[in-house]
Image (tube, rainbow, N blue to C red; front, top):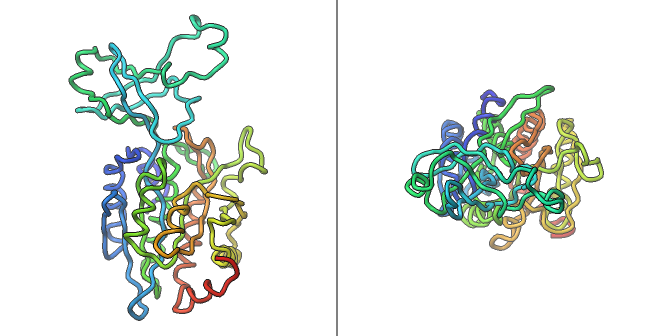
Length: 353
């Protein structure tokens, strides 16, 4: 697999929360030759299972990344324009002027617009437009829109991924398609490798609207151990190192009540052996990832959360370093190949959960 091309394809694909089918089919095609068994649960999450060689009943480690992206939904037709609301946590500061795709009875290109600044009051100029101030302009008439765009139609960003300097890539939905790419690369690394445990790579749905896919996938997969890959804040303009993490310089590993302390230690030690830079990422409560749901599934699942730093999170122009994706894939593939019959017992003997 050529990582940059794979990530560009993933980024460009539509797959808003609750409407992930197009990107799921792309992921399924990429994983087809990399696992022995595939399954789609009732909420649409895709699971790819690689069977281990240990004695049955075998333990299972679930490695997950959510595939859904943030977007918009049509709430009404206002003359020749579409009124919309958000699906997921969009940074509305960047919405004005964005090109979009309206997924009606046929695809429509559109632009998000608002009133020009010349006619705004002084107070209106001091705030960012709210959703009531924004419209999607497709160029069609009201009559045409009513025939093509039902209320509830989804709207995704029309932003093509762009290769950048120093191995960076910018585009939409890199939260969390960057981690999906890491899962693909992990499955490639596992080809021809011996592992005692079953390994389930899971692309989950609806994380951006409440970790729903992770909740269902954990019950469906019934893992003994879970590793969640998601993105985290990268340093940049206005984001200092006490608020974010440098992109291209390594991964983060969540530490706090949402992460099993012994699993944290084992992954950090494995990263050190592989010379992969790891920075602890404190989370005093929820990590804001599928790990929050997976950890409390059934009788409880020891969970670790790996972060890939990105810039401009929850905008159509997120930026990630390919080398960090490669690091995540290598760390996880080496770690899961080292799991044995006593791994879970060693975690149970640890202090804490």
